[in-house]
Length: 162
Image 1 (cartoon, helix red, strand yellow):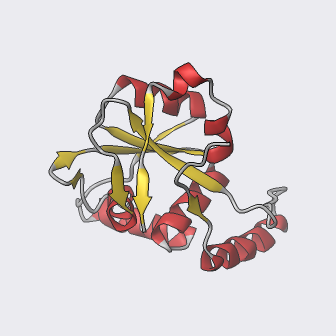
Image 2 (cartoon, one colour):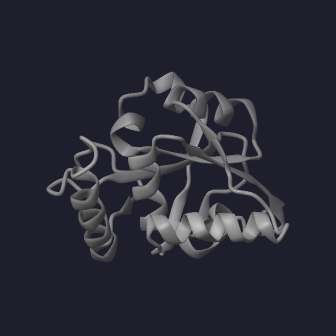
């Protein structure tokens, strides 16, 4: 079985997600799996020069605090699925979903940038990653592992340095 570099949900993020799930359970049917921490794979086009990235640099990209890493400009893309996106961003940034949303709103109001583009599905994410070598995206590990080998060969898994 191949292993891929992943982000695992931290205990702080797990507590925040549990509290959020308890709150949301009173108003929606959203259920968060507490026994299985989600894992994510950071991806780019196979021709993208980036092979490793510091977790802090990736967080700065996703928080729109920078567009460059090691002299190369990148665009980051999120999946629009709220639960999965919140879990990914909370794990990456160590911020709660509310803190992340406040950050994006404040940044946009100050004219300092805008939140990353969102795509509606994993297929859309894969299409963008294959199409452009300037995009960095992510998928849940389970979705990446289910891709065909020819599809995986069109993308590069980026290793994350903690």
